[in-house]
Image 1 (cartoon, rainbow, N blue to C red):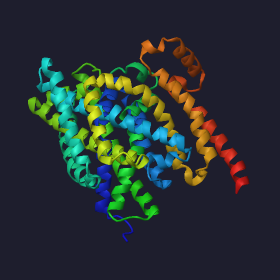
Image 2 (cartoon, rainbow, N blue to C red):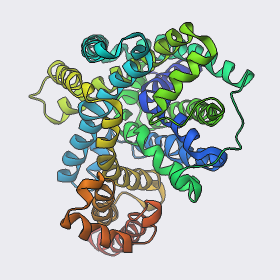
Image 3 (spheres, rainbow, N blue to C red):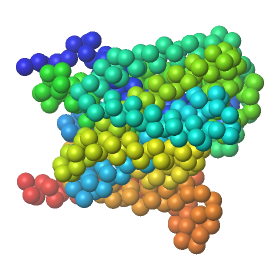
Image 4 (cartoon, rainbow, N blue to C red):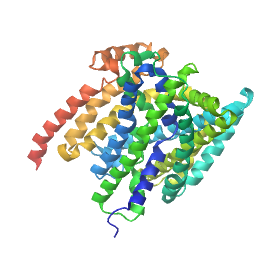
Length: 447
């Protein structure tokens, strides 16, 4: 029996995990953040890195430390009804409802839209969506090949191509960093960067992709749970170091772009402008390759994880059938448009992220605090209500004017840290503390 991975195997696992994570949001949100943060880009990057790489690392580590088989196994430490609900909602969010459609839309808007006339863009997007998800589904059919497809082929190619664009941007910068910040970045750049990191979906993805990493390690011959846990964490470190460097560079590129371009409504538009300015038509082709490869490798992983996990939860549903669903639905949703997809997904993310963060933190602290029902149950229960309040606060303005929404927003605004977007933090801390104390009393009596 194999006792541990070689460094070469570990590198490929880390590269695979990076490839799974680094998709649509990872390209567009750091650039947008850089434009909005202006001269406060340094603090905003720190906030982005906390959620953009800190939480994913903790998520991967939490899966490893608790020796869980995946997000469902981890969530059962609260209770099974919560585990089913949270797992299905998470995979629908990072799968066919939001993340997967965004991958195709981002690929099109950044990579192909410059080559299509305005009149024909709807048709081109529809055709591209079908082709994109057909290829992603075809490569996701065999989960055992993901490390080869993503870790050995697609990710290295992506890094080389993106490196060319970044090199040009820093050798001949478009502008400096002394530009005015916008919106919430004026007063709360770090906290705003932190919540902006939600949009990368990486903390949620770290829970979703845990099963792929564990399966890949087992496929290489390592079966001892303790060693799998260590290898999962090592792969996570390799992944987030790469992600952190690229996030920071993309955000700085966004800020410097203001020397030539006005702030855009999303980072995809800015990336296209930057590539075209440096390389002309070749820049458009280069960016098309970068974004399509980035989004394709993440799509393969999400489709596979969706099929693998839901087949495990509901064995009557076949893996192949589930992957077809996870590939077909995004073909429809992708045609909504990138900016609309982001606006629709934000309330759902503001609800799921607090729950995921608390679950991840409790998992990481499990060697100290344990995994008792009281701890996990009350921690999540006290997070659930303010997380719902946060979701209402992120609804479109027209919805927020409704009477029920106004009542919820009034209560939400009374909670500590609500202005910074963390109204759930203090209730979650109270719930975790109460759960730990009650667990020590009642679980000791049972023992």
